[in-house]
Amino acid sequence: MRVFINIISFVLLVAVLAAWVMLPWVGAIVLAVLLALWLLLSRAGSRARSVTAVGLSTLPQRLGSAAVIIVGIAGVVGVLVALLAMGEGYRQALSASGNDSTAIILRGGSSNEVSSVLQREDIVQIEQSAGIAHNAKGEPLTSAELVAAAFVPLRGGAKDELGSVQVRGLGEQGFTLRPKLKIVAGRRFTPGLRELMVGTGAQRQFDGLEPGKQIKLGSQEWTVVGVFSTGDAFDSELWADASQVADAYRRGSSRTTVFAQLDGAQGLETLKKAVAANPQLAVDVSTTLDFYAQQSEGIVKALRIIGIVVGSIMGVGALFGALNTMFAAVAARAREIATLRAIGFAGTPVVVAVMLETLLLALLGGVLGGLLAWALFDGFSASTMAAGSVGKLSFSLRVTPQLLWEGIKWALAIGLIGGLYPALRAARLPVTTALREM
Image (tube, rainbow, N blue to C red; front, side, top):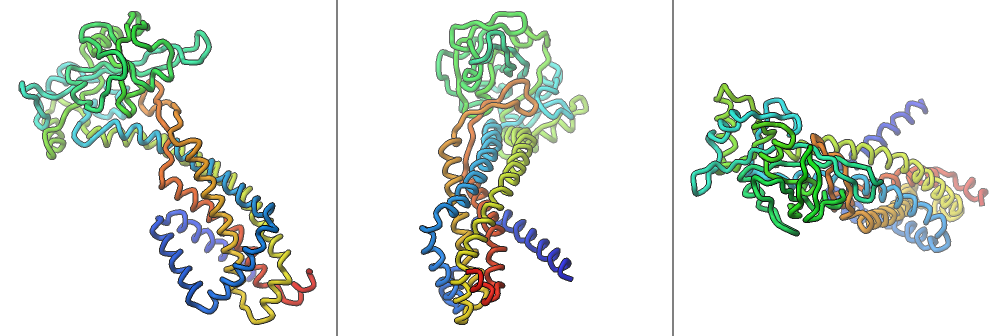
């Protein structure tokens, strides 16, 4: 029977922790308000306040043991938030590359630009489809682009160490479709010439990409003429004229992608219907916002799983530290708790008091860990292989308020478990036994 009760208790605890992890910050505020009202308005809450005040007043004498909880939980939260910030920064870098007013068209069934191939006939028919906006000259606002890979020296690497960078050949309207583009140094490439513009992210990762320098793409020498910034994933690329990139990589008139400016709010649906009704076209159409968000899903999920696994492993260590500390604190206050029980205090105020003390220490650890992660990692530059890319993607880690809240929830969950069993022991301890332990 006792084993069955223990199993039920464990299942309930797991359910409570799962609900807590999914709880939004608004729900946490509601719980905090309800707890405060109980402490202020009820007789049991008043007693719990008194016991808690006594326990907190002894913290200066227990700074060493309290620091074990705070530092342990701060380490867990700091590592967890830092790993999640990597995924968030990656997601933001890709998501910022798209918007709802621009479409991306790839060969049907292609999951990314690298695996897509569009022939010249496909591109002509796409550009003639309804749903695409036109400029003042009546020309479709489209850019047939080609993605390829180049191998250039890594910055700070060995002499012959090369890294892969993504080269994008832009069509005539390529710049028009990217209004966020800023020229940081030099100028734009000249169509028809073997000239390159390099993103600021690529320039940080690779050597020899300063204006005026020459690098080899394919079997040809190219001149770097400018440095650009878009504030998104494109910063990790090299840009050149699409026809010149196709010539260097022997792609002929084929391209990998067509970007198009949509004609109004219904442009996407109109374009989808138009290409679906054309039996000669087998392409997929989506907004660039949806496309790049989907590209980031796999990496973000993987980084989140890694963060949770690492955080869980570290959390176990912090949990045992909290349990040992609070069991020691309860043992040191055994006579005090026994006296309170003897004069009429029920078990509930004692349990709540021990739990509040542990949760307060856990909260301090969570806030400390979150602040350290924010100070050390927010804006920190990193790079990884982008999904569907042939080169490195440079991005900055982002410690958002949502990630800080997740870290604090983890801290309080550790504090909840770490204080629960010592609190129950304190409430169940017979008065005579507690007096003898001292």
